[in-house]
Image (cartoon, rainbow, N blue to C red):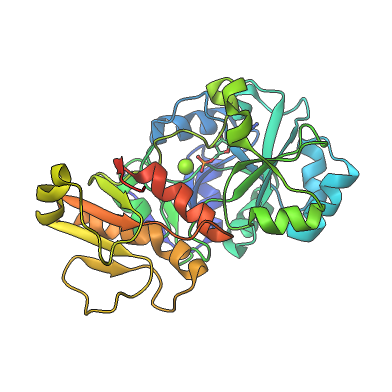
Length: 332
Ligand code: AMP
Ligand code: MG
């Protein structure tokens, strides 16, 4: 199949109506979209991505009114969505009966978010129903933040990529479960920080890691340990500037190794070294992480060495993605 990159929401929707999933830009990462009520197209998402069907999909709605058609809402859901939607916050709620098991992996809950990106919103409006969309990459690969990333990973498998430029946030949405409203639970770190949610809710969130052991694997969504991985092995360290590897990693560290710095080091950069945030801003670093990994992955490096961020705010989401991308975690 020939894959076209274009800028027309109408053309993207035309393919959706013909039963073909298409890649659409959101403010987080590029999504591979299908209409919520088209099971045949949704099945193609799983096969194009080679994603196991026990990994449920996020439903994208235009607004609170549309949310009410897919999930049970409560006063808490209403205030949270008024504050954080449209934007990178996904809520896990009790689903309405019309939602297929294919979307929820057979669960009684559904994950819903309301995208900010105007091209994605246009597509929902044109098709007239919510869209399901996981990230537009093959299972466990790095999520795409540009149309070219999608082409590199899914070219030949989908007919159309709607190009909206680079994604603003560049990391997947924050996921919060409200299935037990006495315990709002963070299932995935993302651009809406745990601190911001805790402040708004006036209590700390429960962290999924605390409850994971009690759940079956597919009920611990977004928590696959290995995920977001480049093909080149990634080594995660505390601080890269003056890093000294343990003896058994010395040879790897010295053999065509690429370096990913968070902020500019105090010496000039060498070939194969990149800086996630020239302006020393963790939000900028987060938005550049996947692009940097994708770029290094297309070059001829034997290993990638990256350093962790401070564990606060968006830094938690960055560290979460880095640790899942890591082949070896060498942090103390
Ligand atoms: P992505 O792979 O980027 O599309 O991320 C989608 C994430 O949302 C996955 O990790 C899913 O497991 C999670 N998710 C989707 N539906 C649900 C649900 N009903 N309950 C909990 N998590 C969900
Ligand atoms: Mg994904």
